[in-house]
Length: 381
Ligand SMILES: NC(=O)c1ccc[n+]([C@@H]2O[C@H](COP(=O)([O-])OP(=O)(O)OC[C@H]3O[C@@H](n4cnc5c(N)ncnc54)[C@H](O)[C@@H]3O)[C@@H](O)[C@H]2O)c1
Ligand SMILES: [Zn+2]
Ligand SMILES: [Zn+2]
Image (cartoon, rainbow, N blue to C red; front, side, top):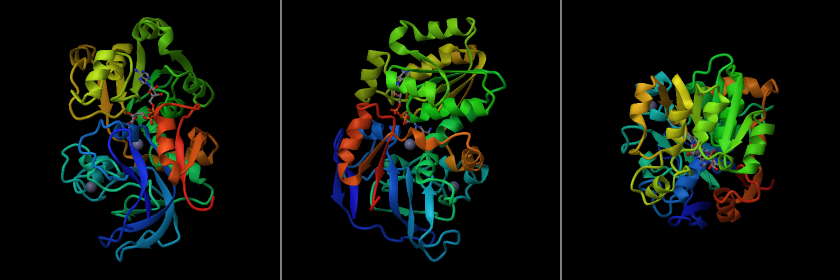
């Protein structure tokens, strides 16, 4: 089969790989019909995540059709149209039974923190991902769901990660009615967080980035106010001014490890001297009000120094984060989509064939052609 393959930092290509097989009775093989490229894949592309091996196939946003199921699979049958959450979860360990699906204890022998993620290096289990014609889905009765007839592939794809993750970011912020919510990062995840903040009762939503076209999307898609990083010498001070000098009630970091804004921290992160630049997280800590909530959904490596921990403690902040257990968000998000409150697929601006995946990565990574998010499509569509 054809599959995306990592060839080292900034290099991906399409290769022939053996077709995946059923390896366990609860496995399914999915024929992929669309696969997203996530901002998290860019950290892999840029060589930021440890143990990303040559030949690894990325892709943790998967929509497809069931090709084959193992003998113990009960909830799926060949031919079903399914969406697959980005995390692999056993469904029965201490953590899964508490809804902490991304912290599953049974799927990743290497980790004490995160569980397993498709196509996300050996630090998350080494499972090949879905930017390929076929993908093996372990614990097939736990992860994938049959897509309701009324839900489009594009909306379903956004539920497998980016939109659900943004919604989760808003949820972690424990937004109270009329709260002012600030979102750092106007990528797909930040835009989803900003849009979702209204569902939780926000009274005001402000999105920050340095890309005009993404801020424009924040205004039209997320109905948010926007602030351009380049227009403010000190973004924290600007946010303080905008919030009566108290700070925002809730701040969501949807940027993560590769944040711009401090050259030294950025370079230290690029050279893997630490697990990412903490600049967005520090701005979140600085711009939230005392006693406020910080939600960290941007991805970081295990150890990040120069985080403003003392300020966070002395301000009495509540800080929460996780890889999003997206399946937990699906019931409520399906209600919102069916009611016409949101169409997450609107964030998919570019479509590429698998053969052109190197170009897709380049366009998304370099933020070319006003790209918000690309999707890889397969087959005859
Ligand atoms: N927690 C999870 O489960 C989860 C799931 C998906 C993605 N993520 C992470 O969320 C983050 C965002 O993902 P995405 O797909 O939206 O990525 P993206 O790269 O498309 O978007 C990131 C945005 O942040 C902006 N940015 C850079 N530095 C900034 C700064 N200092 N302040 C404000 N904005 C800044 C960029 O211009 C860009 O628009 C990534 O770190 C990704 O790994 C986490
Ligand atoms: Zn992702
Ligand atoms: Zn588990």
